Image (cartoon, rainbow, N blue to C red; front, side, top):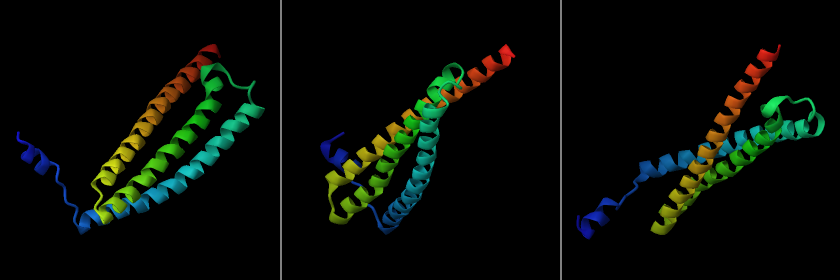
Length: 142
């Protein structure tokens, strides 16, 4: 493949419809921010309250890590949502001024959000599995 073909392969043009879709994603990201802030506030409240008042009540590994994971999940959600919120704004601004480097950086921002969300999903899956294991252990001892 020649260099000319490679450049043409990555020459992307965004029309008005594409700009509208990116703007709609920006609107959705603000709604996501409000919901993430709500969820994070509840998770932080529950996690901190569990650490302060109910520390001796928890049984098993799940009970020990639950307050910490709820706080960690809230922080991961906030940071990843920050990147999701930043992506469309950064991309639209770059398109408006014709900044190719800025548009590429916007996709880097989206990748960071994706990585953080992947970490969130992996940790959440582990926590869910531990909660089932903890319930099974409690049922076996009764």
